[in-house]
Length: 141
Image (tube, rainbow, N blue to C red; front, side, top):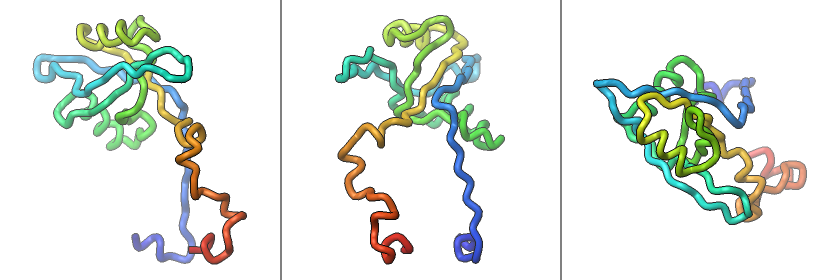
């Protein structure tokens, strides 16, 4: 917080790829992938997809996330709400993806970030007027 009191503050903004691949391999010491997932039906005519619901603190995914964060690879950290687009050779069908996740000792997953949510939801845009449209006093604070 002391840095924010300085005269100059350096801010870095990164826009990461919307898709990335992670690999998890079960072993004798750790047989659980460590996350829950579920099929989300689309209301907009798009196909159903497999979503990560929760990441457990004692599983392989959390361990991989911690390792990636320690190495500064924040763009490879998986969060709840992200979609699993493909697992090993399977792609698209949530039931087939779930089968791979439940049965295979090693899984290579293509993950998709949820990057469009704010732009697609008019409710979430309420109160977010551009800075230029706000009075100078509120833009400066």
